[in-house]
Length: 416
Ligand SMILES: [Zn+2]
Ligand SMILES: [Zn+2]
Image (cartoon, rainbow, N blue to C red; front, side, top):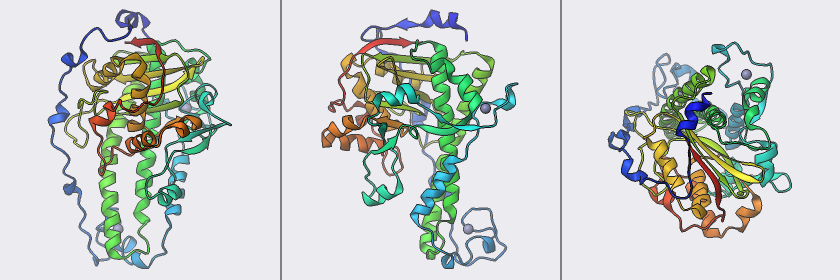
């Protein structure tokens, strides 16, 4: 890593940003791009086809091996689908680009923590448990699609089988200590892990969606058609997401292998205490923290900016690390600048909103959540379910500072 370059552009910030960042913001071309034409991917379900014709469901198989007589096949339960998803999530591989380097993998794929177990998760755990916002099927059904965060053991929280034991150790050792200095190198490693996780999660989602193709066994034709159309629409969205995340992972791999951090940018904030929340993820910023639109999803003409975000704890203080590869004037920088410009004592609240809006790899201290007013819990739950076709994200949620969630101040802010 070329730390000299970094020293030149490093700014230690105190309080508000010196420039009005909104004046320097450029309008992202995606905001004017047309939305996808989802109808172009519509299926044309046909009850009776020739046995050797390609099935209407787009599986690529012949009708006789696919939807012929599906209504008389054995029914699956939603819990079987959930088990299928879990087994997809357990299929691991190492995300290190070993084929492009001279550093082969070790034999064991481990359950890699996206957030350090010892420092990050342990610091917010109570009786070795934290809360996760990822719902399980039984609760989705029980609560009619409105589940509350649920308890999970710290051993299982934030893990994914995305690295071999050697690379998990070697790569992330510099950010696994008791203390952390904000450098470009450490920010890069946090961001690399977030991107590797995001690619893994997207791939698992795709495999799960493909496995759902069989889930209409035993259903009448109309229901088969509806389910297949639902899958088709979702796969289209996932495909576009995959394309983005693959490209992004490749960019990070290239930087990792060449030990170069050109074009990698970051910002980091240290709070004066432990916040009751940790997280790790990567996403497309849609609005800045004041609710201004930054870029538009749901279009496939214009490339989108992504940003990685890790929130964990070192030395009894919560650290927040943003990182991205790309230019310095895009949506990622605008999001970060809008965050840095927030009044110090309100940053923690803005962070919580951002996390609920954008990642489900997010963990909470149980007593903090339980102590929130019901209205705040509801507002946060709603945010965590935004970003779907049914429920789009809004700038209002990013900027909703009426919610009082955490009181904390920052002690260090670095941007580079
Ligand atoms: Zn079919
Ligand atoms: Zn490996």
